[in-house]
Length: 140
Image 1 (tube, rainbow, N blue to C red):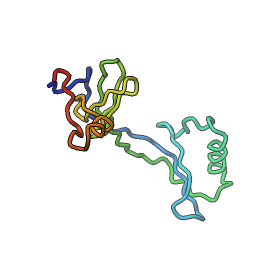
Image 2: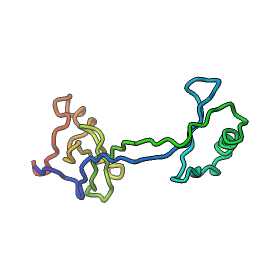
Image 3: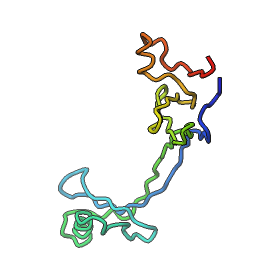
């Protein structure tokens, strides 16, 4: 039995990103307001990519909206990148479920450790849940 049947296996990884936002709190509705991602100089990023976003930005900056400018605030984002590996068919498979992670190209099922396993449909056909997550041994 292989410890891992996926090629190019990558362990789950946690990364951290710092994002800056210009925040405007509503003066009329507690907990509401606007937040726009900005660069280090406080310039809004991608503000003109969406008409509604641009209109909201202008309303906050011009004083048209009843908001309080909180200035630039920093947020730390925690990003969990799931474990993954390359299936024998060449498709990368993300491993997010403890027992069943199917290759979207060929349908091979892997557990969270990257071992080939019998998927739910196979063990249900076999008569029950006793085979759930059983390692797929091609030599057996």
